[in-house]
Image (cartoon, rainbow, N blue to C red):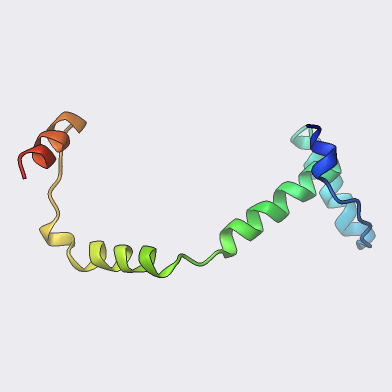
Length: 85
């Protein structure tokens, strides 16, 4: 399936100076302006996502129990620890 089939054509108006900056940055990365803008938008969406409740709880659990966490020097040590619980 072509990636073009998954795209929605749109038109936006940009300040001429902003467009020139985008064009310059896209060229530095050897990308099309469209691809460059699309990538920036995807990155902005990813950065704006808020973790779900389960993830927030896990983050808080690790943060609040940092002193109780066990470190491992290798994956093998970690697996052995899990298997011996």
